[in-house]
Length: 206
Figure 1 (cartoon, rainbow, N blue to C red):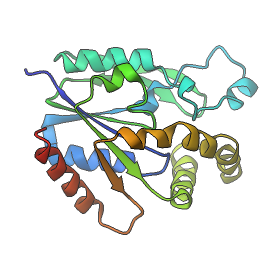
Figure 2 (spheres, helix red, strand yellow):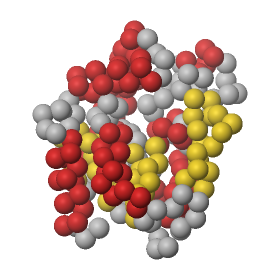
Figure 3 (cartoon, one colour):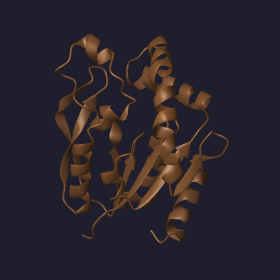
Figure 4 (cartoon, one colour):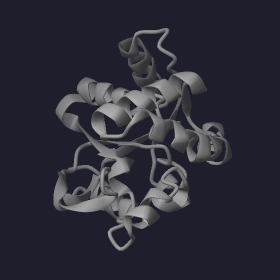
């Protein structure tokens, strides 16, 4: 098969990257696969529970960019690879792996999807998903409580101590180099946003 094309979605936590990635996958169907950068958090099994709790998971140092780069390179070359699976309750990697199969389109989504220079050099199209800070916080609370077993107080505390600062210092800087920016404050149907994105990709001869 031809080498895969790589679309990256970045943006703040709660901006809607995962939902948009899934809608892109729905649009492209069997031609596309999704890589979640969240699966590539570094394994903290060597740390105590208290040390893990103090870790800044919104800092770029929390991401295993080396492994992510390796997996992307393998997929883009047309080969399958086993990616990591992460447990957010224990902040460790699971023994099970995620089977990633090569597709003509690979969608990478995460807060630092085009932060690393080596990974960015492999990308074909970059998208920054933007949303107001209050909306992102509400979405993050809903996600972490329902999907990751967190309580509201801990999510808010983490937002105040790490999330907001890391967004301003690192994540939002990716906006400047994005090929396309999506505003996702909930005032448009997401399908319409994705159709606009797909048209932009086609215009840019993707």
